Length: 132
Length: 132
DNA sequence: TTGCACACGTTATAGCATAACGCAATTGAT
DNA sequence: ATCAATTGCGTTATGCTATAACGTGTGCAA
Image (cartoon, rainbow over all chains, first blue to last red; front, top):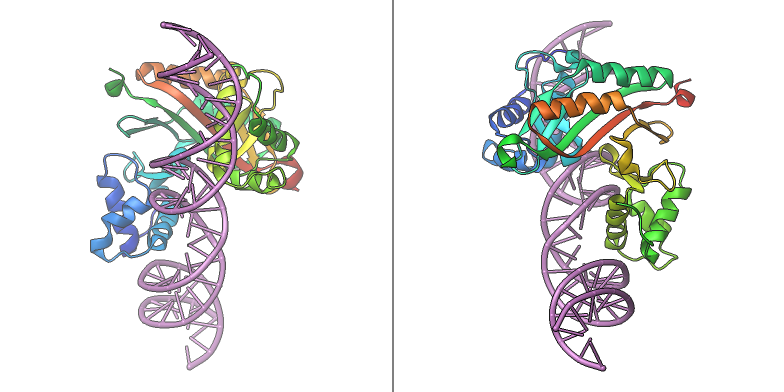
């Protein structure tokens, strides 16, 4: 799925995420958009739902937050499984891809005849800068 | 960390998880333990916190639920990274380990001088039985 | 023009998790 | 023995995350 023209709400939410230093919760996004007329969580969640579909935003399950995809313009769904390293100190997120990991997980999945829909890989810890 | 003698609340929560067919939310556990005198979410969360430390219970980040570890008796922390396949249809969870995946992820982590604390791998989809 | 799909706005509610207080039991050092 | 520290526990209150249900408007195709 490639991203069509975004609606106003979708654009606003996406811009907030793109300009953010790290992942944001839906409610944090809501607060940042109050001046733009946002009043309810659903406005954010509905926009996020679409942005996730388009592959331009990722959801971080382990911290209930959202980040803009690190590959501007491309559809991230085509890169295989996305993995994240999340620094619990500074909040920064590094997105990466590893085809060998994909290959192993998909191999296991095939051997079990399991039909994967969405795969989450998240490493929480401390980034180099914060490790000092 | 190996599991010491469990307290009453910890035992009750663990038993519920062990007997369950699939993962349970904290509030579901609470409901199942009302007859045992449980009245508040904190009683469950506090027990879960310890059981997670002991490595006898896992948290599924993507569905805000908890499962008993598939390796009764052993400390699951020693098996390397734990991965889960979660069937969105029947709710069943399959726990597995793949050393090659561990190896790749830990290699990446080392290359980035990232210090991992907790790693999540969860594949949501449909199990063989439900795929029909 | 009618019907459908979609985005949107609003209110209300459901579901998940923790803060803050105080009490009781245990342990271990003095 | 006693005191202090630790740990588990119970309770109340609160905060954060997410969705249900309803109605509106707009654009487009049959």
